[in-house]
Length: 158
Length: 319
Image 1 (tube, rainbow over the protein chains, first blue to last red):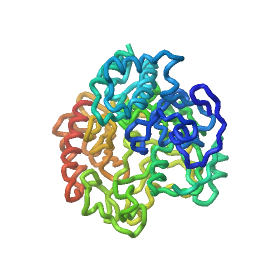
Image 2 (image 1 turned 120 degrees about the horizontal axis):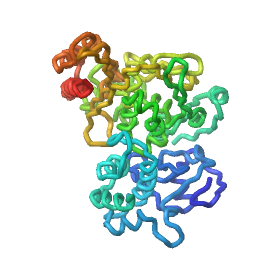
Image 3 (image 1 turned 90 degrees about the vertical axis):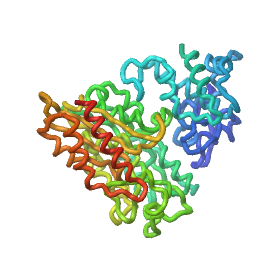
Image 4 (image 1 turned 135 degrees about the vertical axis):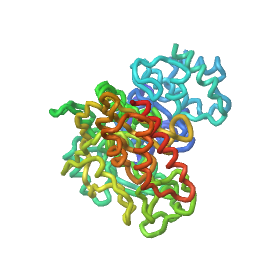
């Protein structure tokens, strides 16, 4: 498995989720365990470039995959545009959901650039607040920072 | 979670060979199965990973589409042919789950997610589906969002798939390792065997779903009523396609979701509509004819009104 550009060869119990592998074996504690049922999105990472819930992904089922976590978003010492926009717009309160929000937003903006449809727009979707709300519905923020999250993602996606 | 062995199949033949192991289950994206394993509801001894065996969407000789079992929900929803020719299917997929889950979930896995309710998922409670004969606390318990059609004294759970409701309206065919069957025959009503969600046998593998040509499906849509705007199961949903000529309904396809143990094809409503003017009066009559067979539980009679209004509104939008 290649995680944030580094190849790892690991032997794991078949029951290990990708999330537990990242956190417990590789020490990458950015992706968070919220609900552990795929409902909150705090564990979101990119698997082969696509956002997914790491809590429901069995590590063995993704052997050979390329994984990107929030730790791999920033290049060198430069923040990712999404990270800058989150700070700029205060798009969090406690911060627990933030790594998942960032990875999900990164995947979502790629989907939007590729012209992928959503329940809001079928053809030629453009970045808008309603698109962000619909496409980010898999990420829950219990502090309720949604207004600022939408603004941050809109700015980073421009 | 009970320990299990894991094997990844490169193709259907290998999957079938692996699945002869005792207590084997097929694994797609895992978005339902892994969750149920974590809850202790599912306890397979062997997982056969079939998520990668066929991710192609191809034209069929008869003018429809063949969807490989491993096509991810997000890829199926984005396919240009699906969006143009079967918009109800793309729309249903996009109104289901979340972006992250749709990237993991496969076509066959979506169909084979368990018909379920909150009691089924709580191993501290009785449930005839999880532990046959143990009883159904939902009948007298929290059942606001459970079945109004086709339920039995054994089980009142609903099938949560949006995709399957669209496929039911489109007369999709399910290809398995040893037969082809209409999607409408894949899932079962609970009767006295609520532990069986589908008619598939142990070790039988879904290999593809075939969409027959249906030119009037270009005029189709999926409407979903739910308790929040996105990422929630249906209270009631409707897949609908209308074939109109000079304001008269020549043909119609209607299927309801969130109301029964399986996608509910509304054939009685379709019969009422054929040959009738495409008006709110006809649509109301069709809806009421279909829903006359509904049997609400103590607290979910509201679903009958929601379903009626949803049918009338959606057909009016299509007409």
